[in-house]
Length: 104
Image (cartoon, rainbow, N blue to C red):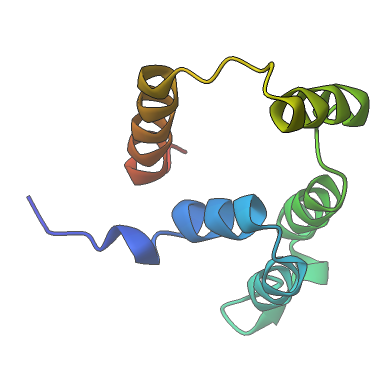
């Protein structure tokens, strides 16, 4: 089985850019993916649609701001229950998810 460097997989680097909120990197990736084999994406409508959708999705986070404010307040006053094993499990699951090869 050939060796694959996970950090160079498009899905992993795109996911990391979105997770980090790096809008400049997301937009740079969308511009670089707009050209396929030297042909502008305008001749490849699918590529352009996917790129546009991913940039617009990344621009609007799928979070409930009100819930975030409630959790932030609970963390500050010490009433939010932090369970280290749940945090560790979530971090491991995120790493495994980011390490999976992209499915087509």
